[in-house]
Image (cartoon, rainbow, N blue to C red; front, side, top):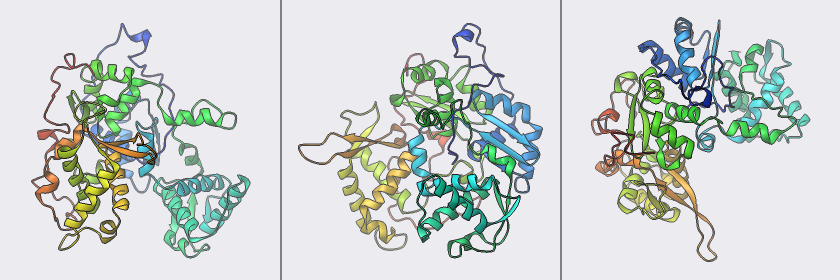
Length: 457
């Protein structure tokens, strides 16, 4: 998943949605041209929405060579592609699960300073010192009535925002070390401000005036209004789509259009493989389509480390001990939050020492570990949390529901309980015990949907 927070885009005029009533009778199958370079560019842009001159020159040249084919595919998603001499910017519609994306994104303080720095940058000269920019951002905060503390926590948030701007090429470091700002507000760091790129930061400004109706404007950022585009983006940008979590319009699209004239060709254009089962659908990345896991998004799983290992163990535990009562749909397993913390406590005790033992802070604080595991599993769409009905005067707690996709890693978590904390070398293939997505699939082996018409979503 990309890290952008995006607002809804207007429907492209060049590619009307086949789901609209006016085109329902004349809808034709969409057949994009198969091209490995175009597919690789689409996957890269989906994960990295900014390509900056001087850093991504080769990719920008490839985009310019294939601009027509890229726009044809991107229009199906309701996205907007901006191509300039030294910049490529993909502007996306709202993400399929905005809360999960926000939970894995920057802190609220970093996001606030990101936009305060943007407001200050508009009036800055093309070359400016970091201290001058931050001073103007503090002035913008005062004008907006936001408090400024000038403490280490605030400087960490400002530094994170500066790095976010630098990653996007909106404000680029020319000289000095940005990290020195953390301990010196007047650190000698020279920045370049690219004023023309400021307009591209908000992906889709929408059609409403945020000053006149802030709440309505924010609602545009929360949900893509068109069900077909929502489903296309969910399949491209999210791990998978679960049938049980769809509304009626989304379920109809999944049942009628995911294979034929819409979903299947879109997967083909991205160089992906459509996997459709009764529990849902997913676009699976072939092994030969990437070299490094970070090319697929910011949250690889399975992965080395305490949190990922704890998540694997918890998935295996839920498959054995989870409840199906009041489940969102077939294949889902539920555990109370108390049961999750109890299981993680037991796993920590068994993996606390020896080579490859878990981090001490997580073993000593199971609630901290549970929060990290929750963020990982909800971010990868392997779990979702709902509020559990309180009993008598007990406080309201969460219930963890583990998706059918978690069956892909059955028994993997317990196969090797103490794995060394090592990072694979660049280009190293995954371990042999990791299932191949194309061989085993994302979903459990039960209820394969070979004919979508026989298994309506």
